[in-house]
Image 1 (tube, rainbow, N blue to C red):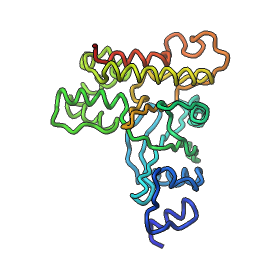
Image 2: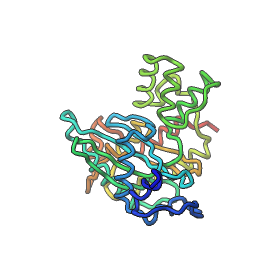
Image 3: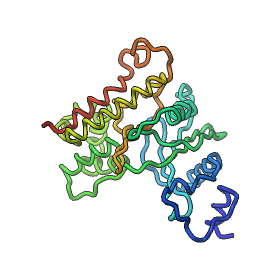
Image 4: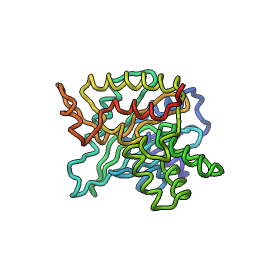
Length: 287
């Protein structure tokens, strides 16, 4: 059996037709597939290094994985984390559950979270979450593209966070880039090279803030708090169709019956989810 046919057989137990399916929605190609089988297949591709690394984060790595047959145009995002003795308090399974609760219980027309396919932990303590790949750019990438365009307009604009980081390192050098990227992550509007840069018109910002505020309100009604929207511009993604995706729930918490925000955010450990609205204001053009 040819390799591509064999790979497809491993996913759903059947050999695909030679001709691509005629579907309007690329996700309908996967309607009959078992999500855990898809998860197992995608993680296998990560272990075989047949993947594209998109970015890294404090807790691990992010990969993009393609399924066989280009006419599917179907990709997955994989978050990988290896447990260690210094970080036993963090568990990717908990992030998966909170993310899944938000996905299943909140329905907003323009603000979403990616669909989850599965979770897996290997004997070597590596943990994986497999989710849909969302085509778009994070606020982090959009901002660094502004910095790139200002300093080296001839460089190609980044399509993802890793490419954005690479551009900044090539423009400013490793040491200056490291200091700059850290400041952008911790407090984007206070950094002198980005403070005057604008990403949105007033009209765009007003719509975004209204939608995000509504989504956060629904999430908080479920007693789920993200807690890492102000701290990382990587966690808000703008898609070509105008939808906004909120991603990366590793700092999220579910705490019922909250009467004081300090119970959720602490005194200075985390910032309120709504402070992302101030970030958007900081990068909005004035009338």
